[in-house]
Length: 255
Ligand SMILES: *[C@@H]1O[C@H](CO)[C@@H](O)[C@H](O)[C@H]1NC(C)=O
Ligand SMILES: *[C@@H]1O[C@H](CO)[C@@H](O)[C@H](O)[C@H]1NC(C)=O
Ligand SMILES: *[C@@H]1O[C@H](CO)[C@@H](O)[C@H](O)[C@H]1NC(C)=O
Image 1: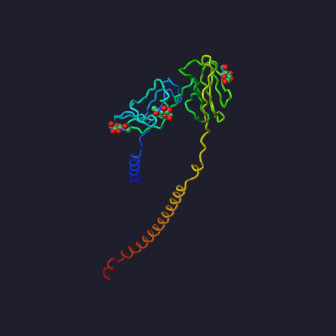
Image 2: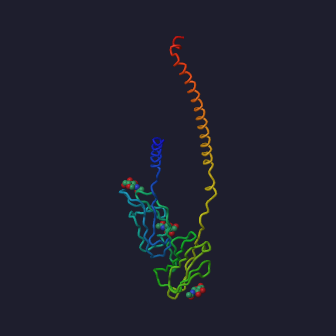
Image 3: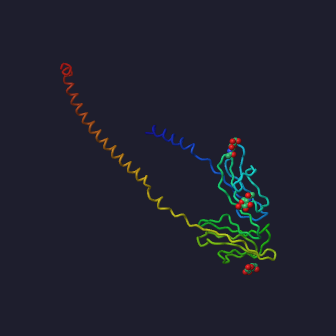
């Protein structure tokens, strides 16, 4: 059995080998904000396996290949044109999923690591001002209601988020003598994924496979019983024959 099984496992491994896909590269932002203000600095890093090949890294902005080939792409003073979709690929990876960068030209901008959270996670909000100018009396709002006030600018953290924290958020504060507000952004808090019934119920092919197994078992058992019975019978007749032959083996020849 094992002699038969090990070549089979080997075959499965070998046949799975070429199908194993190259890993996907990933664009990582540092700092992590996907919405930034003009003049902000952001570094895009391409994470993926590197080989000796050329080019080491390829970058796409809005779908067009750009000339940059280093593993990180530095935007030292963001301009509105730096907005858009970024993708990268290292020599040994597949192209990454796109990352959207939004460059805004306003006084205040609400920032968050992402806009969709799972229940129980901490929502981190930041009221970012243009060129990090001092902001006073910062207030965060959810669906028009004031949620939190800080005398000087601070991040607003919502620990253990629940679905009731989904909504439209913005911040406002005083810069110099001006009362400024950010644009509102939607935040979604999702519940735990509900397992779909299709994954709980056996698939038709699992049932079919089970039935085939039962059938095979029945056939094999039947065959075994038949063979056993025949074997026993032939052994018995063989014994008889043996007895006859041993009595006088010459009889048959003489006939
Ligand atoms: C990786 O490098 C090899 C050798 O220079 C080159 O032929 C190939 O096109 C490169 N692949 C990518 C995805 O850049
Ligand atoms: C890329 O696309 C974004 C959004 O569509 C646009 O704002 C930006 O100016 C584009 N930049 C370039 C260089 O094409
Ligand atoms: C900023 O303006 C809003 C109305 O637009 C007002 O309700 C709020 O009190 C002002 N904030 C400060 C700190 O003056």
